[in-house]
Length: 175
View 1: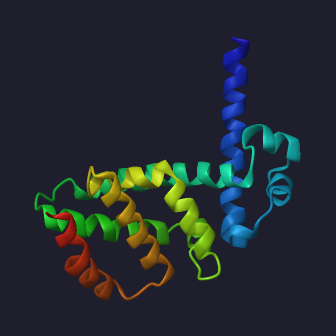
View 2: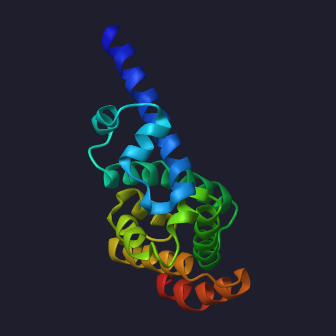
């Protein structure tokens, strides 16, 4: 019983830290320090480091959490679409819209934060898992992540992005 209780408390503390980190990321982008997050969460840095051994680990945990939500949204919204080309196009557009709707992620996708954000996106297995809606090919999945990161960092109008995806991304993945 004690280990269950301890596990639940650890999970609740971890969830609280991730929630506060998201708020800090939204406000400060990738420049937020572990000290800032610990202070905002009302815990010590030692407690924070017990849950996440580095800022990168914390960022990747946040990305994993959000990536799971985005994957579910993509799956749900693609449920009624049978045409492979339409599924690919819509999946990329949904992923873009979902990332853009998250204030913490939006703060990361600036030209100033492009390097760090790209590195995080490409190193996250969770981000790669989102691409299951597109392909089972790991190299194609990595390429899609790069396309999405590029569109997030250098956005266009929704119509222009749709056209680019339909013209350049969808045909490549439809093969």
